[in-house]
Amino acid sequence: MTVVQAKPFTVSYLTSIPSKLVYHTHYQYEIYYFHEGQVSYLINDRIYKLAPGDLILMHGMTLHKALLEKQDVYKRSIIHFDPLYFEKHIQPSYTSNLLAPFTQLKNIHLSLSGEAREECEALLTKLAQLGQRTDVYAYQKSHAVLLEFMLFLNEQCQQPMDNEQMSNTSTKQHHVQNIITYIEQHYAKELTLDHLQHALHLNKYYLSKSFKEVTRTTIFQYLLERRIYAAKLLLVDSQAKITDISLEVGFKHLAHFSRAFKQITGVTAEQYRRQNQMLSS
Image (tube, rainbow, N blue to C red):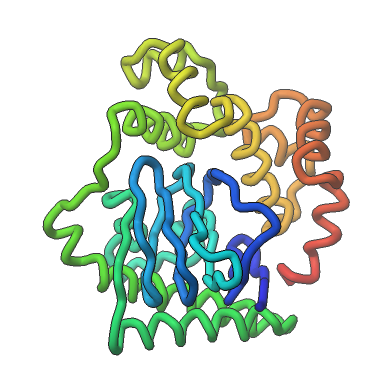
């Protein structure tokens, strides 16, 4: 089992049974590859019986959980990545939008076999190997391999996208996804329930209640964590002052930013920057 991190995307390779299997969400996009075990996977309101070679792509804030039928074996590899970082630093101009499988299909389950399965596993292995190295070239190469992986995923998803096979989500889940999309586009601005109500043309109390039911968190806790995640990227990728970063990601007051950052990450913004300077150099 290998867990490696190349900010701002993480690769967990051939990980086994965690201490807890709980319903959870996250704003990063997820690539999930199943290696071994007897597992069903719950994604929103759908259950998939997994077989080795199965691949799942999940859009941000998808509620999901593994359901183990046997407790002794569960092997999978997972990539989490920030879509904004991908668009800015990895998405090349010579291709179409490589995030399309996530944004158009939302959540999709694929069964790989033959050469496609071999290629997928080879790319995962290469990402894991690069993640174990600490030199700057490995970090740069990991971006190139992630780009290759995304091209592979788009090739595999071309047929479903052409057929517009959208995931069957409920109306409530559709509205929650619209909230998440709006926050992704405007998290650095002042946002209130009134703003969301006006932008999405839905009652603010319905929006708030639906979001909590689907994601198990509040709109403003999600917004807070999204801003902190954006700040973490800026702390690593820029030399901007912490005060300027806090303003850029949507905080009006440095004190509020400092409290929230320490609460969510366990360290101060300055400590986080120092800890990650070597990785980003």
